[in-house]
Length: 88
Image (cartoon, rainbow, N blue to C red; front, top):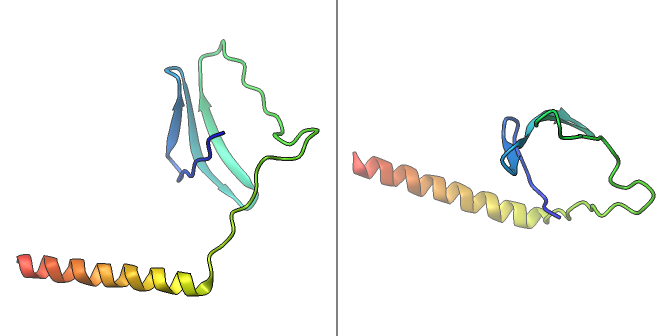
């Protein structure tokens, strides 16, 4: 099974004839647009019907790790700004 993260407007192609476009969403709903030939039968269903769902939520990282990541990102932005100023 493939798990993807898409932003609104992004899409995936399935073969040459089917395109699934993520058009947004809110809380527990997502909005998909499916572009496919008329002869392809598209049925809405429930992945967990009659069995335990194979999906699980990912564990979040600690607050300390979040702070370290933010610090690294800020240092990188400062470095890039400094480099761009030196190039001028």
